Image 1 (cartoon, one colour):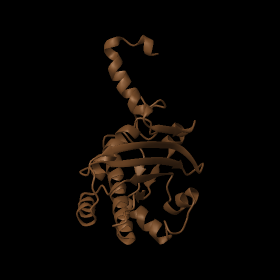
Image 2 (cartoon, helix red, strand yellow):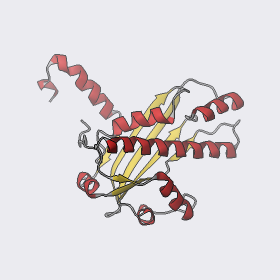
Image 3 (cartoon, one colour):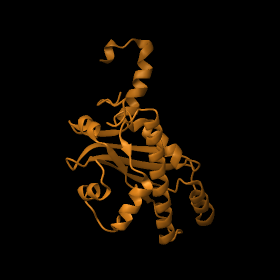
Image 4 (cartoon, one colour):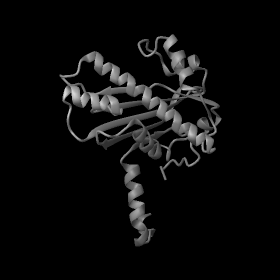
Length: 215
């Protein structure tokens, strides 16, 4: 494959190859079909973990994680809505406030629910879940407060991200994307999600530029 590429075109190919190979992607054989027949999808509140610091109280850390979870959920929702306006996504996206209210009434996340139970609770055809592991807060206010009040220093923020799509009709995982990002203290949920979704959308079965190989 590479031998057929002319030298002048080799660099762009290698750059794209690097972007794809740096991420781990799983998709089921029927991912495209199942995603296409889904009418409504929901975005679950992301699970966020922030590396604990001895100088940060446990309750303060939990509050930061709740703040980041809400921010990430809003940014993913906004990103998908923009693509829907451009007709790059055909599925309806459940309003995150409705999603969160229904989940809260069921006691989630304190009450453990299976993906199938969440599907029935929300009344949707597919659910997007995600996990963000942060070395420090990304939201500007939380990041500054942590740095000033608790002495958290360092210019980089390692972020490990995992995003999954479950189909409700089959109650199974049809797509999963894992990647690690690195950024400075000024990194924000908006910037991170933009970078994440720009990469993930290459293989996400909801988007029209979906390709099983990520190209």
